[in-house]
Image (cartoon, rainbow, N blue to C red; front, side, top):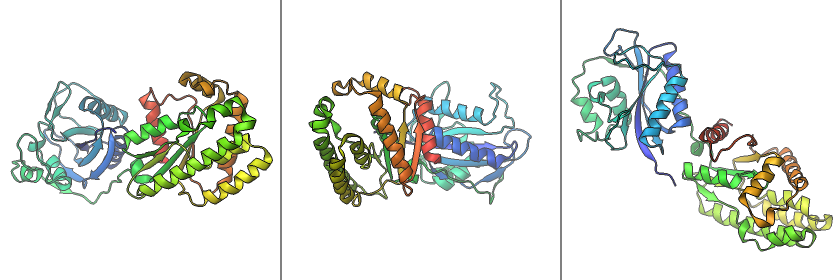
Length: 374
């Protein structure tokens, strides 16, 4: 579980479509920095310290697990992405977007790149007014008084006009979904991704207990003999785990992430069981399936077969080393047939064959973006 911190940012723009610039900045912060908690009203002010077009200004509250150094790098990347040209001039000037870090929890930071609390914030009503709107009781860590009191003591006489302009607060993944099931072929990375998302959003995890199944190593040695007891034991365990774990969690208050969905039992059993065994198995499955809560997002991670074989070899489970490409291809087919048949299941297929979401942050963020935007 990652440590989350509350930060406050000031955003301003006075070039181009200023409202759109600020909205784009908010969206990018939501993707690269953290969860947007609050957005102030939009305020209009004259340019501060130089002659130029009027500014639109806001403040936002963000929950982040980034450290100050990484946070500042992401802020600079966002400004550059949105068209701001960085320079070393100390003169104030017009800008497409300007993002300042005002507060980082109650920390005091003095580094070459970043000074927090922002050294000028107490002199600027275009910062204090929107900040006081969303965090009136937050204490400035140096002057030890609330933001509301700081505003009341401010000597800034510049007019700050509240507008009727509206901005949209992006939904974070844990606000948009309550229960996410992540599926994939053997070696696709579903458990790894589930753990990463669980860590990122402090979600409740429901992870398959396949390692405790005594029939699994035996199955890979003698599929015909052990297929039925293996599939029945998996079905019973999955049903019990999902029934027990989902009953303990509040589906409307906690994000739940699972690295499997009970329908995988049917997919694998279609491949491994004889016809008469499958018919009996299907009768048992249909009874259990009616009782299981359905995820509001079902994700299928697709990895091509060559990549799956490579991943299986890397993780080194002895009983998996003789898995044949043809067996993995059958599993692929089974999943896609299942997805086509489930019209009422909210499904997202993500091809991760060319992604390394474990080692590359950008690849991981690409997956999160696909999930959020689905």
